[in-house]
Length: 246
Image (cartoon, rainbow, N blue to C red; front, side, top):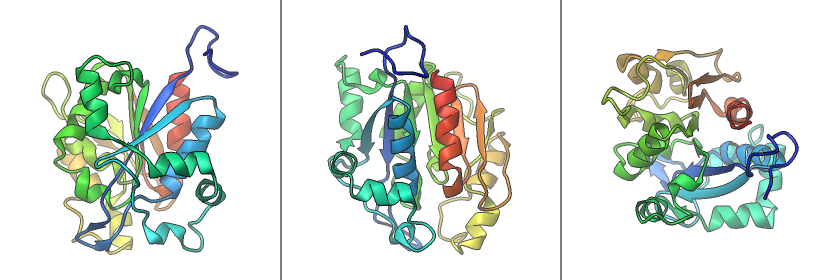
């Protein structure tokens, strides 16, 4: 299938794998995926003509953070997503990330390298099963080494702290990137409940961490690494990925 308007005529339709958390809790209490951070990417990608698949750590549906369905957070994208049989059906029957990796290792056409980008959605659930996860680490490092786009928003970038470049240096070292800021973590009173603060950790790893004002859109692109700061940054982060795909 040829790419729709917006992509080069010679380019096959791009494919993106959205990776979500499977965790329903973390040290701070009940959590899950932040709904807007999967709903907005799904629609912005698909409306641009990008083919989307979803995977999570355990396979099947991801828990949704109840807070993301509260007043002021339940956006139009969220409302549409919850009533969209195709979108919510995909969300409810996600691939298991390990199966995607196995397919890649076996050289199957639906493996990891069939995707042009991997996109890690956020939510505090990421603080549970995106941390010290060997499968996710291998997926991120494999895509980065292959020159594919590696992207994450809000708490999704927490997974990058465990990853390294092909030369063994930290993935984020020397790269301009962002993620949920220390001040935003303080504002939601979870500083003592997350495994580490993303901003602080990235700086320790030698990243050129940048942030905008709390709760304002901020996205960074450095090579094939794309990051967003917070829930308000999901659209900016996705659009930055689209700019790299074109």
